[in-house]
Length: 76
Ligand SMILES: [Zn+2]
Image 1 (cartoon, rainbow, N blue to C red):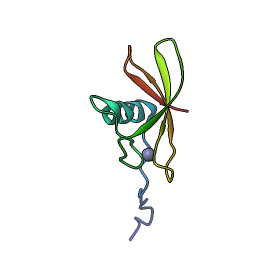
Image 2 (image 1 turned 60 degrees about the vertical axis):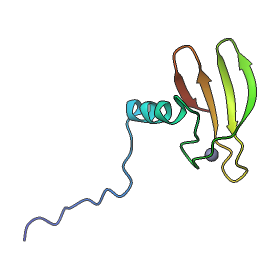
Image 3 (image 1 turned 45 degrees about the vertical axis):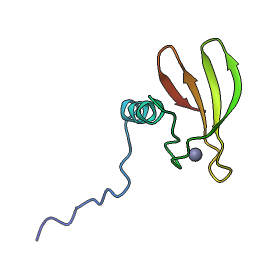
């Protein structure tokens, strides 16, 4: 029995590209919070083509920066 090195990867760490894709899938075509599944967001300050939004679920409150032109979504 030489194989004592089995790693249990219960928490898969997403690469930045996978994370970006996951966020994009969550927000397009219909905005949905990737953390709690909520569909309501509070608009924050906007600058240019991007906009800060915050999940309206008080228990969640995740904040994102969404760019409507490039369809990129970032956690802030
Ligand atoms: Zn949320």
